[in-house]
Image 1: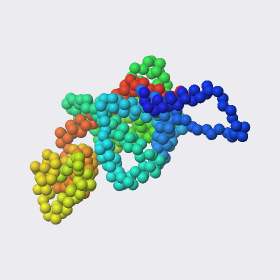
Image 2: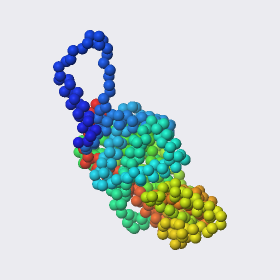
Image 3: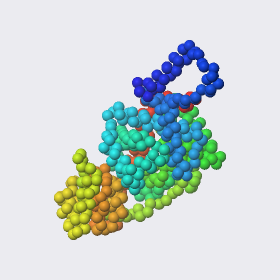
Image 4: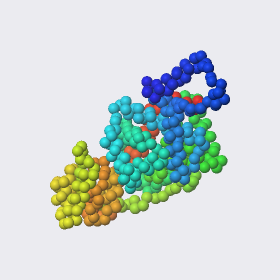
Length: 443
């Protein structure tokens, strides 16, 4: 039995036993003193053999409400906010439990490196970053475990969904032909959506109950109620508290069900109910635009020196080593020759040469530094999932998008679209298999 659940049950039994004991004598001088009320934490949800307590929920509600206020978002009613956040916590716990049961783990070294990258992206030292976290009212140990869970869920999605996706050559050819014929490949859409989820093995009565909830949401929208408010109140999607905002999506990333409907909309229009295997959807078109420079792409010819972090070698030591190499290049030594000696990847024998790189060819951290570097400049040391690098951009060019590039882009878009759909379906089934008791709804 979960330790937290056991402790709470023990407390309950103890209170019950004390109530059956004989009433003690009370000193008359103390009889007029009102008893001190001590709030007792209670269970708001049970997920398999673990529990979510009222205190757990209150901490998360406080944090998310603070974030929404900073972003200028409109907060839903307190009970709606609680319900939405508890649903998200339940789904996260279902996934974390499944990951742990199947052997997935995130060690402290991986966790520390991830948090360091987050701090660096915010231009903060680890000390300043920790102080900023705690200033927002979040205990740092809790923040660490939340990040560990996020990494765990990402790895779980990769293993259970992404690694099992298959994109056929026929699908790629069809996508490329569709974009060429309809020119919809040049379109991007900024969307918001509402999802009323239907369980995988739902009965006709359950389906009808969920449909009525979706109709109620659509009715609110037709009455002129703010979309963000309706999404926060009715949507079961993870982005409900962000107003259902999906951000910008290229047409190739959208399910056919969405694309067929939004192509008929004007900006700020909303679809009717859309039915998919996952449930009922309502989609709003916020903006539409064409892709800039769709016919050409910017390529960079770059080389780098990579030093991998490992046991016995700290990040500070690696940065210092790469900084010394950068100084040697500035003093006139050849970057390529230094790469042959010091770089720790397959490009070392070629002087660190990575060839011509287009957007998406490298990890985001590398591409960001490469794009910001001037031709001939050697970057400061920076970290990616592979280790620590310095890089030098040798040339840049604008190149026409080849047929191979078009096919690669189409394959990426299809994988992303399939991944979104498959993950939503996998999560729905995982939730249905779990034992979940939502006591907040029973109040």
